[in-house]
Image (cartoon, rainbow, N blue to C red):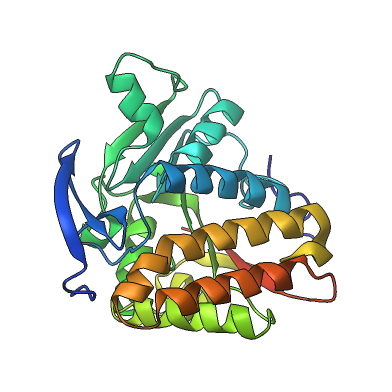
Length: 306
């Protein structure tokens, strides 16, 4: 299910936002801005069922937009790693696609399927497994352990000065002649004043966590700097809003979910009021529904060989 034709053509901000704390499966989480979030990480989006549903929706949206699951020229990989696996949906899809391949997802939190398996409801592919870990602290694997290392949409999770180390870790665990792949974005473009305002708030919120949303566009240079060869990069500009028909509506829906995830933090940090945020969100919905718009979301797809 490769993307057909792709080759052919530190410290966290928001002090005082923590309203309550709890432990889920040994992972520290806090009620921040009205949503449960993992604490101690630059990543600000929630960890709750609403966000899990959004991430699964986003997975299918990207599979549709990018016409497949991966871009690297894979043949019969023996092992695949998914860094920042989130809900585990990509990793499990790859396990189904390559039934003789060992596929491992790594993240700071276990995916829902792994939590359900611990409760006796195991629906995971037999060739899939999960390993807890954080790429910012070093991946919990030996050197040259995987044939294919994949990472997607961690542009809001990795501080700007930590990106070289993150890419180095992907390279380190990849075998000689194996492939590394990254899919990132920089957010929405040409969406009008409401989208621009929302992106500005998200960028300001991210900057307080030392995250630069524009880092998603520089992965190819980082891969070359890490010593990868045969680096190939592509930018897929995905229409966002009604002008993009079904796909555009899907991307707009996903972004609205992202904004709702950030909303409580943005308001709590004093970047705007709840009323202003709600008005901007509603104005953005109207802009997305207007076919005159030409908003798009660029996805930077980069592969490199060890």
